[in-house]
Image 1 (cartoon, rainbow, N blue to C red):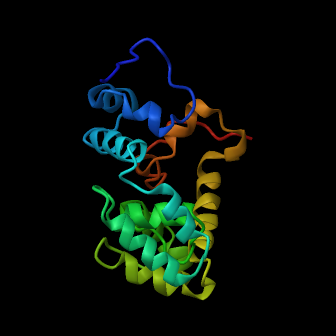
Image 2 (image 1 turned 45 degrees about the vertical axis):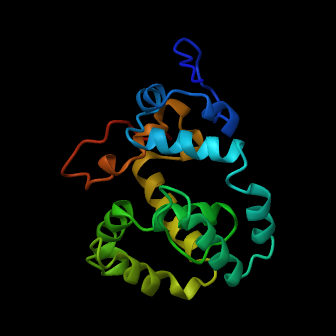
Length: 191
């Protein structure tokens, strides 16, 4: 059974139980998720109904070794919608920082800083190799080095993020990261 919650606000990130009962059209529209809404609801239902063994995943995670990472990555690969980018993000949230999830935002970041910092003209085809070359010296904390650099860039663009109102979080998107000369930023800097 699905519920729409059309007039109830969703304030905090909902639990799997709360997500599992939502209608995918409601979630897609309310959160701007498009086709991913159905995957999120299915993932939540699989967690709630025990088809995804969360305790087992957490137990494997406790080792924190590269072999644990590989085992977890293999288990996550079996979940619908968990491609390389999603797996790397989930595993980063589980404490594995040696793999940088790469996508078009990573390419944008490397290109924007290429003249000043990295001298890389990355593409979606070369970005994984490029981040390995740039951030490899920080092993096993490559993601943390990348994230610190990205966070610094965001704060240069938008001001101190800790002072940004929650309502402006949506502004930190790739479309607002284009070179300043090519597009006006939708929000003024926070001092």
